Length: 208
Image (cartoon, rainbow, N blue to C red; front, top):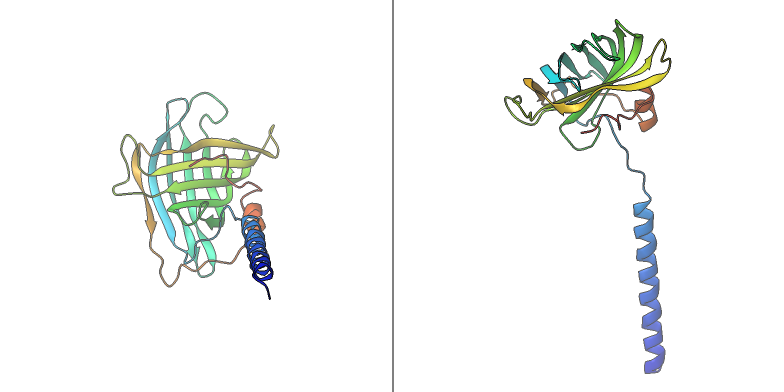
């Protein structure tokens, strides 16, 4: 084999390898990245305190939620002390926790989804977003955070989706993300199942 033939062969091999690498990179980039998932190992979150609404009033909350024995458990309570606007005087009290997920894995954020009674809209789906950053976790600028949105509020907004309080710093209180233990096992849910359990919403409007 001549030097020219060997050179051509080497160039062909390089081209094939480069092409294969490019295809591999393109295939990797097209892989679906899930927006949220049940934490593994799973855990649980407790919290209470208040945030300031867009109208400058207090909105109080208390919660506990997480995984337990391959399911979800917990309770969420929320009261908006606004005197005007769509959510003035809103009280949310959960009946069932349907999902507990990390919306940006791996992170210390947790989303709690469920079905709740409200004094203004009847039964709704809710999604709460929490963040535990440090102890004690409160102060004029957090660092812990809380947000809540509702889906299926009615009447007259049947099927509508609305952010009550976007995810923001706690102005008082604390959020606590607890470590996993032997009982905090969660179910295996697909992305579609999680979205359905959260009233069809992904929480993208809540912010971080």
